[in-house]
Image (cartoon, rainbow, N blue to C red):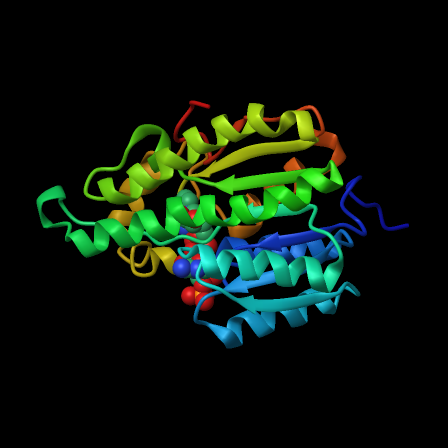
Length: 256
Ligand code: NAP
C-alpha cells in the first residue's frame, strides 16, 4: 500500500519559480503526495510544461501560469487564476529567485533593484495576493525559500544576501500576524544546491572542493532534499510549527 504524508492529498499548491530546480522538485513531491498544482514560471515555458506533465503523470491536476512575481499585477493574476481554476489555494511556496552578485562597489542600481524586486518584493506580492483567500478558507500554509546567505551573509553577493535576510524577517512578521487565521508561515534556508542557479560553480573542481570543506555532510544538496522539508512544512505533521527558519544545508550554517 502506498503511504502518503498526511494533509497533502487533495489540497491545492502554488509554487513560484517552479519550472526548474528546487521549485520543480517541490511540484513533483506535492504531485506524488496527491496535491493539485500551479507551476509558476517567468520565461522558460518548455521547462514549465515538462514540470506540469511530470505532475500530471502522478494523476493530479496541474497547470502552468506565466507571471513575473516582481509585479503586483502579475502576482494578483497568478493567484486569481489559481483560485478560479482550482476553487481554493492551500499551500503557497515562494521560491522564485535569482542569484547574481558582485563586489559591493560593482553592483549596479539595476542589479540591486532587480534582486530585491524578484527575491523580496516578489515574496510579498504573492503572499499579499494569496492571504485574503487563505483567510476566507481559515487555512493556509506558506513556505518561503530563503538561503544560508540570508542567515549569515555572503561575501560578493550582498544584494542577494540582503534580499534573503529580508525574507526571514518577513516570515517572522507574517507568522504571528496570520496565526489567528489558521495560516502557518515558515521558511527554509538551503545551503548549496545543484541547480541551474549555480551553473558553472561546481564544475570548477578547486571551488567545489573548498565549498565541500564548509559542509559537514560533505555533499552538495539535491533539489529533492530541499523539496522534502518544504512539503513537510505544509503537511499536518507540521501543524504546530510557524515562524520557523529550517536549516537545510548539510550542517554548514547552524542558526534558525
Ligand atoms: P533556478 O534553478 O535558477 O530556478 C529559478 C526559478 O525562478 C525558475 O523557475 C525561474 O523561472 C524562476 N523565476 C526567476 N525570476 C522569476 C520571476 N521574476 N517571476 C517568476 N519566476 C521567476 O533556481 P533554484 O536554485 O531552484 O532556486 C530556487 C530558490 O532557492 C531561490 O529563491 C534561491 O534563492 C533559493 N536557493 C537556492 C540555492 C541553490 O544553491 N540553488 C541555495 C539557497 C537558496 P524560468 O524558468 O521561467 O526562468
